Length: 398
Image 1: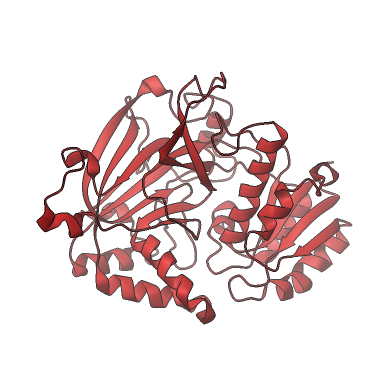
Image 2 (image 1 turned 45 degrees about the vertical axis):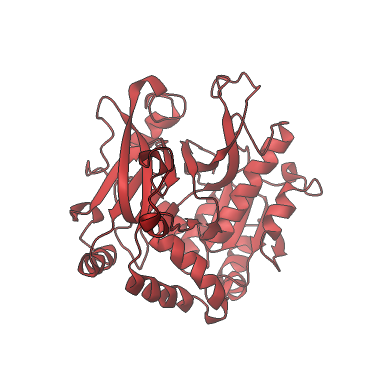
C-alpha cells in the first residue's frame, strides 16, 4: 500500500561522470516499468532548474507520491532546498526570514549518479544504483536531518509567535544542507574548482592538490552549543543503522526536545577560537568510496544533531596525516591530536575571530593575514557569506 504509483523524477545529465541518463535507461527505467510506477521525467539543462520548477506553481506536487532525483549530492541538495522552500510558500511563511522550517509532506528519493554520492551511501550503506531504485519502488522511508544556514549579519525581527521562534530575531536563511558544510580547505577547493569544470570530477583532485600545497589557515571564532549533561558524545562508538533507536527517540521527541537535540535551557555555549585549516559541520557521517569513515563515523541520520569538525592549522606533515586518515578504512579523524569534534544542534561561526580582536580593531601589521577569508562549501555549492549560524532540524519526510 505504501508503494508509490506516480513519481516526478529530475535527471541531471551533467553531474559526475555525465552518465546519469545512460544509468537511468539501463537500470531505473526497466525496474520502474516492471513495478508499474508512472514516471514524469524532467531532464535538467541548467543549474537551479530543479529549484525553479519545484517552487513554481505550475507543478502540482499533490499529483505525485514522491520526488526523485538522478544525479549527485548537489542535485539532491537542489531538490530538497526547492521542496522546503515550496512548503514554506504554501504555508505562507517568509522564505527569507522563516520563524521555523515546515516539514514537507512528500518524500524524496535519490538515484546515485554523481562523483561521490555521499548521501546515497549513508542512507543505503552503498552507492549501488539498483539498491536505491528498489528502496524507492518499495516505498521505504528513512528520516534525514537537514541543517539550515543563516546569515548572522542579516537579522530580522520575528513577528511569528511559533513555539520554535519564541519571538526571537531570526537571521536570513541562506541555504539548507543534508551532508556537510565546510569552510577553509574544502571551501577553497569548491570555489577554485569552478574554474576547471571542463575537467569533470578530476577538477576536485587538481584544486585539492593546489590548496594542499598552499596550506592556508583561517582565523575564526566558533560558538558551539553543547549539552550540559554531556550525553552528546561524537565518539560514543554507536553507528547509525537500520531502525536506529537514537533517531527514533529524536523523531518521537524523546531526545530532549521537539527537534530531537537538546532544549535550549539544557545547553551551554563553548567558544572556540584559533586558526583553522578546515571547519566542517557534518549532518551525516559523509562516508563514501573515497572516504570510508567520513568526517564522523558515529554521526546519525535523524537525531537532530550534527557533528562539528574543527581541524587546526598546523604543518604540511599533519595535513598529509589528515588526508591519509580521511581515505583510510579504519582510522578516524577524531584520533588526530589537531582535530576536535563536537556534537551540537547549533553553532555560530565568525570569520577572522572578530570576537577576540577588541571590537574588530586589528594591528596593521597582521591585518592582511587575519582578514583572509575562505568560502563555504555547502553540499558542493559555494556560499560567499562567511559569518553564519547553523541549526539542525529533525525531518522524517526527507
